[in-house]
Amino acid sequence: MSLAIRVKATISAVEDSVFGQLVRRYSEDRADLLAAVVAFSVLFSMFPIILGVLAIVGWVLRNPVAQARARDLVLSAVPADSALSVLHAVDEASRSAGYLGVLSLVGVLWGGISLFSALEAVFDQIYRVPTRSLIRQAPMAVGMMLVFSLLVVAELAATAAAQFVGELARTLPFVAPETVPMLSVAGVVISLVAAFVLCFAIYYVVPNRRLKVTQVLPGTVFASLALLLLAQMFPLYVRYFGSANPYGAVIGLFFLLMTWAYLVALALVVGAELNAYSRTGTPQMRVVKETADLDRRPETSLWFRPRRERARRH
Image (tube, rainbow, N blue to C red; front, side, top):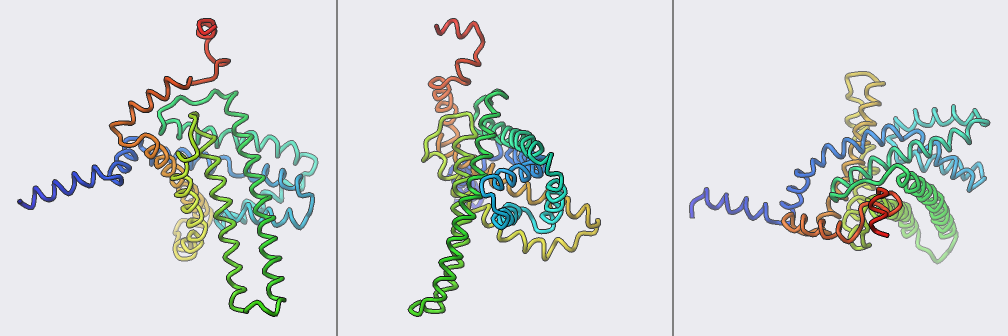
């Protein structure tokens, strides 16, 4: 067998493999452009969402110390240099106490609907289904913002419990000193669990398609691990490459935010591609399965269908 035939057979085998089919699907869906859409929405909605989430968490906790920890926890997902600017903006908004409640409510609605509408448009493009109407998108977006706020509260409680257990373990005589640092791993585990729950909610609720739990697990596992790795590795990127920016501090900060937002969006889009592939199988079977699913489930609810179609159904 000649070398050319071997190379052709190898390329064909790679294309027919799971990895090759995923790459083909990624290319067919233009997932890099979809990630750019999500990244722009993340940048556009970041400040109003952070302000709204902090207001909701503060209303739930009603404790200045817990509120400060919540602010640090929310801003820990943002690159360090960018977090300082966002923190300054949040503090400036907080000084206007009379307007903070209204501003937070508007921020949650505006930022949440914008971000999750973009996510739904991207996911529906991947699943080949129509998007929800604006009236149906708003409750979904507000619900996801509440889930995110509750996750912040739950992560704060779990982190405080882990710190309490660590301090208690240091006072126990029968606990070996070398086992105490192992408790610091609890923080990483808590962050991973929170990321897993958030990604699961995004993949299960946001797409305009009825999905099983098992159909969103591949993308959930990938996206949660990718987001956790991004949170751990991005400070190293800032340390070694962020200072080499020749365009000035302002442009460098904007470039840093764009890079972070695009990597987050890319992780979410690739996770959605994994879910769609695991659900439909090979690309050849995708059209048949998705057409059958559309026949079983209406594109929109009966209420939002045209009047003539509602009359025919009755």
